[in-house]
Image 1 (cartoon, rainbow, N blue to C red):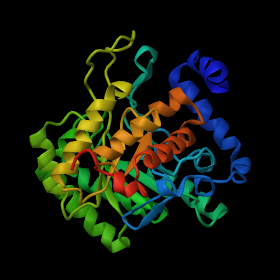
Image 2: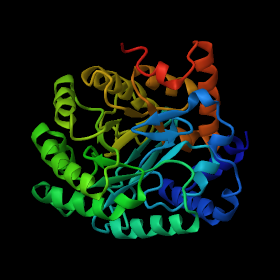
Image 3: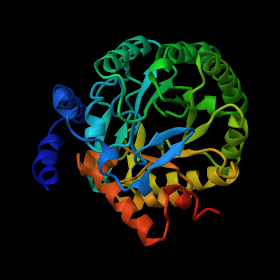
Length: 358
């Protein structure tokens, strides 16, 4: 495979953040070419399609939040086979994020550690970019989510107003929204997962969301929560949000072998897989399967995605698996999912959701 034999070794010789920026620049520059490439609706097995909160998804495999934070390469994602994309995390205020270096590869573990810290051009800049994309083509070919987070200089006491500012700017451009209260890289953000805090935040966001024209609102949670904490979140979002994203990166470092394993930040990739699946299974049970879950963490193959789906995820997202697997990864996973569904006698993806957790 060309990516693994030639392209990945060249990229992996570069600083991780510099190579990431280069990839986005190249993908963006090829924008006019991408629009002529058929999206996943043209080739994906129909049994892989899903409808979530009334939104049709051509496949359940999306690009996770954090990869295209500022919507720089929007037209590449459907062409590469993604069934949806999550832009962000977007903050109300423009901010540079944490000092560099802040992104590290752990090749022996097929993992990444990042402490980017919500580097963002700000909600107004991202909204302008999304508006420009909509002007170029009336309808973006796959569902587009926007992930919003708290600005670093804003204390939790003023977090509600900060999130509302971002929601107001990006709402009209998004098909669904994700509220990020689980990043380990902005001090205090994870405290917003506590039941009273998340309930107050979601009450305000839900009111504004309805006023603007209600769109599905998801909450992104950490993988480092115990059963009691997950139960509190599940109870707090009931009636306030439409779904969950499980999970963000982890602060755990169990069993890692790579040189940079002790760098501070959030860990993603293979080591996160089992932890994310455990969280999905617990949330599926706690919500009795009533809320859709987007499963994230350690998805490299169709088998990884299928495990998340059978645990209770309706959709899955990839980030680190895309970095290590290359541009063919989303289509490879979707093709494999179709085979796995046929093997197990499922006529639709929905029939497989939670099959191992019921």
